Length: 403
Image 1 (cartoon, rainbow, N blue to C red):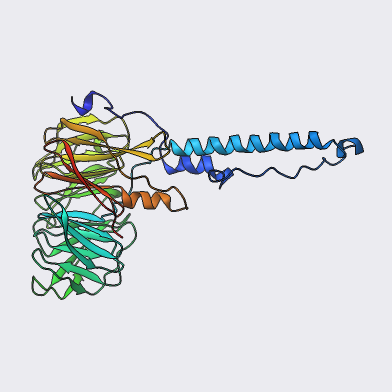
Image 2 (cartoon, helix red, strand yellow):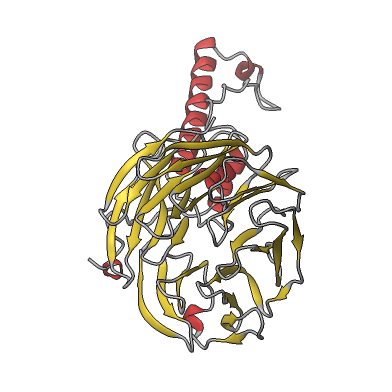
């Protein structure tokens, strides 16, 4: 079955986005947790003495009706909130990544690596304050976001501490596939890409420095991909733009249907890229020397997160709530030709919906990453992770929470 043939196993339309949640819950904040107590009933101004001295039975009945009405409204709010399918996540948490034979995760103030195929814990190293981890071109790791930056060489057993570089909220990190010492930093809504360069001996670099920024004319502040050959691909009001670091960007001429991507991801070759929008439409595009649509289709529902490698595209979906009230999630994987490999419901542990930051916590706990050479796929976050073998189309195991 092709992904273009319909919404798939779990595709059904639901209320989208945090905006809908706010509209539903703002007038009745807190109602979803407790049943509001009955109000003290007083006679309206100008009421007769007879009305003021109503029998106790009548007053009790009125209070019961008011309490029941408040409970019904609160229940309706809870029901609407539980059915919510979360909108596509704008920024990427980047709290876990595959590097070589390992899955690296940040959580509990530590960087933890697990070695495939058993995914037994290999290293657990203190990285206080780190919020992002990125794999470099040679499978080294950088953990960033705290008062200190940390570097881990592929075969090392200890971290190298580096001076801090400010990581702005919502910014995205992209490794340069052609230069193992360089990472691209893209601040949210910026029209420039900032290269961070490791300086000093390769196994023990001494610092991270910021090089000259690369301008992104017309960049709409949303999707950007660093392709396998090092070229940059990004969205603009004029359509998709392709840029080599040493050359001026040029419009690809893909046409208006492809001008507003939610995500751009490297494709199965250095001259291809995956395109996704917030409605769940997707395309596999050839982007050199000119734009050509290789395959296209629709998942029929909004994505939440996505990842790619040289073999597949993996997309995570928020599916509303189960009968027990927990948020449901599903996974779809397309092959290199855009054919649906499989689509599955996920058994991820429920996340609490308490507190004003529950959406941000959900985003950090629901990430999908792929091993560059396959066949591993990981979905989850610091709380728990499911590991899949996408070639066999089967779930391999679960990893516990990082404490």
